[in-house]
Image (tube, rainbow, N blue to C red; front, side, top):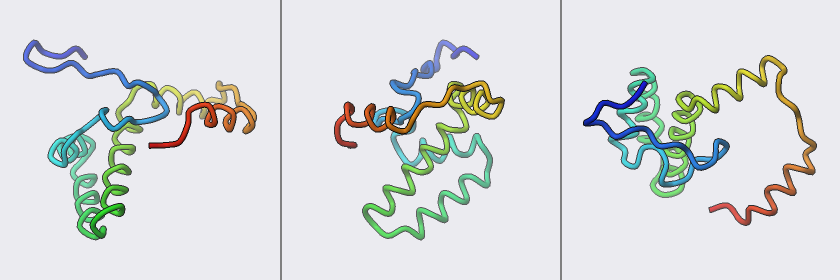
Length: 109
């Protein structure tokens, strides 16, 4: 679906396997609004987890988890990868290749 003239078109993600800080919702209000599109229960669950989290890293992890959930359920490339995996249509790679790739990417931010 294309964006209406007054709407901002959706941005492509830089890496289909990682959510960068600048991608996706940037405020709690935006995150809640996008979670609400998945269902009211998603917002209720998110609010409960956020309310129960201690200040600092625990709250950041709740927010990051919600952003990952949103990406997994809304990004078409992720849905396509999951469907291909379930259909047995994807090639697997040795774990050594994964570690080699991660070593070239540097430390996580």
